[in-house]
Amino acid sequence: MDRNKLTRNILIGMAAGFLLGSLIHFMTPAADGLLQVYVVDGLFEVGGKIFINSLKLLVVPLVFISLVCGASNLSDGSSMGRIGLKTILLYLLTTAVAIALALIVATAVNPGIGINLNTDAQYIAAESPSLKQVVINIFPTNPVKAMAEGNMLQVIVFALLVGVAINKCGEPGQRVRATLNDWDEVIMRLILMLMAVAPVGVFCLMVSLFANMGFSAIGDLAKYFFTVVGVLILHFFLTYGLLVRFLANLNPWIFLKNVAPVLAYAFSTSSSNATLPVTLETVEKRLGVRNEVAAFTVPLGATINMDGTAIMQGVATVFISQAYNIDISLTGYLMVILTATLASIGTAGVPGVGLITLALVLTQVGLPVEGIALIIGVDRLLDMLRTAVNVTGDASVATIVARSENKFDMDVFSQDSDAETEAVV
Ligand code: ASP
Image (cartoon, rainbow, N blue to C red; front, top):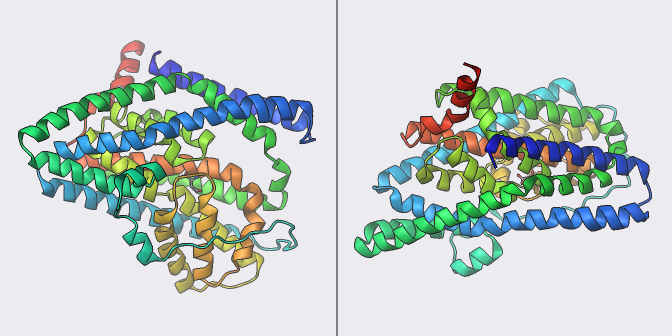
């Protein structure tokens, strides 16, 4: 199927799923009604879960094979080092900007003033590992275990090492590389096969999500909710738009248009990780980023770059401090920027983890972790939105790095817009 048609069908699937799910929600408030049990929790939930599982299925083989190919194609170690350094710096920078924006807007809007602290919801903070352990854990002891557990950073480290070794190995290395390049094609084909059924998968996910989503929870939290949404939109258009325009010297509208299909996957799965196969395919085949850069930047981003999550954490921190009437000083705010940027590295790209790492940020500035219970009611919907921002951040950094390294295909980037111009002419 033609790509634009597919994108259109995915968007139709999303909208139809949203409408049907919301309709079911208002028609059957009882969680044990027949419609709920057999249709929503049965048919649609099964369909949605199968779709997410199929996306996740491709993540580990894709990251490993694609990254080995990418690393083995880089002719020298210094360009690999440069790409790595630029990528990590840009990821840190965009996250710091995201959270600074969130703090500025939230302190102007004051979403938490006058909030009623009596809530039945409870939040028990999970134990988070120490920084030392986080660093040690990046290095795998057993590649098979890393893959089986889906530990992305460990898989990335192993794949990079194998890629470098292939590069240094002469003829045997060439043979392995040729085989892996073929495997890369096969995996990409699997992604395309899965994308062909995405409209149905996304439809099922949206129905089961919105049939269970309680909008009444927004009530008191409307100000918090819309502040997060506002900053997400601001960061999405302004920060990424300006970065793509000035650091990559590309038209931001074409960039956003090309990246749009990925947003539908991120929104309906709430997981940067599950979206990864589609992000990588899109970054290479629609944005024009060459495999050498995309294969490293995108999986790393899905694991450590969470701008949308950092935005939620910034607004939530201000909200909780105001709700509890606890002042955070200027140094406190700087601390929030620092810890939320680091916390975003430790946030795995799966649904809802942003709330867990929020505990880390709150503790750091002396705010009560139980405050998370106040915002939990609206987090599901925010998770969907912030995941879409998270993956857009990965795609924009990949594009900027590829442009600066001359590993970018302008023809691919502008293919659809050329076609459109021709069609108009
Ligand atoms: N769901 C987000 C993601 O996968 C992480 C989070 O904010 O909870 O990108």
